[in-house]
Amino acid sequence: MCHPHLVSYPLPRLMYIQKHYGRDVEVLMPKEWLIRELTGETVTDVFSMRGIADLARGVYAKDLKRRLGIGIPLAPMKSPTDLAGYVTEAAAEKYGLAAGTPVYIGTSDFYAGLLGMGLCETGEAFDLSGTSEHIGYLSADLRREGFVSGKYFYGNCTYGVTRSSGPSCDFAIRQFGVEGLELSHMMEGKPPIFLPYLGGERAPISD
Image (cartoon, one colour):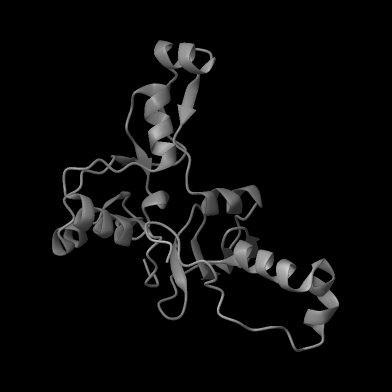
C-alpha cells in the first residue's frame, strides 16, 4: 500500500512508542480496548492497521516488522465484519448492557465513513471532512504516485489528504468570522492558500 510520511499512521506510531517506552508495552487502539473490555477478546481489523498490514491477505507484513525492528505484540487481525465476541457477564454488570450481546470488530473512522456514504462502485468520488480532509475516489487499480492508495471493501481507495481540516476551518472562523467562509468567495478564483498544520500533526506528538 502506498503511504505518505505521516506519523499518525500505525507504523510510525509504533516505532515512536517502541523507542520511548520499550518493546514490552501493550498497544491497543481505543476500539480494540473497548472490544476486550466488553468481550475479553483482543482483536483488530486489517484496515485499521494500514501501513503495517498486507491488506490483500489480511495479515501483518512480517518482513516490514522485522526490517524495522517492531517487536511490540499486536492484536490478531480479522475482517471488520467478523464477530469479535459477546458481552461478558462482568461487562454487562459494569456497563448496563445485556450479557451475550454480539460485538463486531468494525474498522477505522475513515473507512466506516466511506461505507456510511454508500461508496461501493469503482469511479465514485468522495470528500470526507472532519479532523482531516480526504478527497478521492474508488479505483480499479492501485495508484503508485502522488496518492494514498490501498485496498478497500470494494476495489481500491485512492485519495489525497489534509491532516488538519477541522482546525483549519476553526482557524478561518476565528480569523474572518462565519461570513468570511461564504462559498462565493471560493468561486471567485482567489481562495486563501496556506499550510494547514496549525496545531501540529496528531498522535503520538502534536508538535
